[in-house]
Image (cartoon, rainbow, N blue to C red; front, side, top):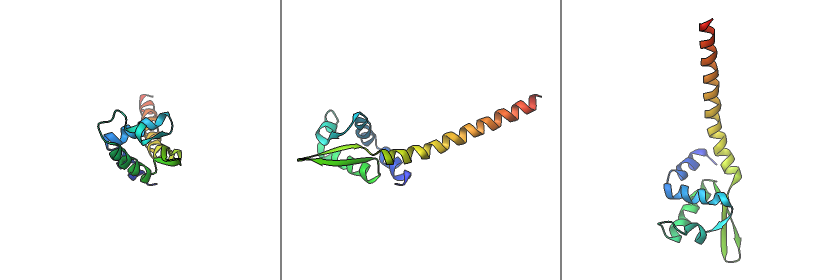
Length: 104
């Protein structure tokens, strides 16, 4: 998965809500659509985009399809953001050490 596809997929507020609802575990489309201002077919389309971005996976059980967060795809997205955090911490440490050296 390219992290760009995941970021683009999560840019849509409805899609992000659908993704966040999967935090509690696998759910069928009907459950995910409950309370949303969009139809079940629209939720299915959002899930398709999330699946193509590598953020969700599905499994068929009888006539229903259950969706869940794809941990591998989420890990790739997290790794991408972790690099920013690590760079920010390194920059902060370097700045603090420079300031400390100037004070002496």
